[in-house]
Length: 236
Ligand code: PGA
Image (cartoon, rainbow, N blue to C red; front, side, top):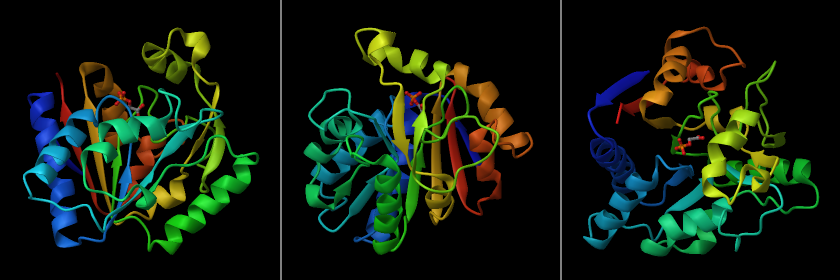
């Protein structure tokens, strides 16, 4: 794992955007694995600026997102589909038909998960997967557990995740209790992984993920087994 420590969120966003831009330049029809959360927002803003400046072209790019809340339609302002449209897709020249987010409203989320993994496979796999990290070590919504789950699957959110995400909702009671997340297989099969972590509250879990044992209680620790991971960390 390669760790890049920077001083500011601005720098983190600039480096992350440059790495993703490089991927798009090298392979204009690449598959980007994308993430939600507050950390990637700056990266997406910079990617949109680079697109506007003519430095990168998203017209042939495909994207697959990590996760979605159960029961939230794409029009709900807290759904991850809505987040992606607002923070990235509406601001770049991507064809929305080429952007995929798991459907949290599917009648059968297990089936949706299987189909999502098939979709990723049919696209040729993920060229670079952007990840945040939860305070509990989750990647996507792969929460701490007794085992790693390979397939894209429904999950019950950890209380710490509900608490962390309550800031986006009217109250913690409004945060959906369940979600669907890309599993470890599709994440680990990405050719490259780029993790962004911002804030002192992420330091301990990041250290455990990078230096501790590979343990499903610290889901991000599985990344130690991936051959090409870059982590960008900024304390503020
Ligand atoms: P954050 O979320 O970027 O809002 O801190 C990260 C995550 O939960 O994966």
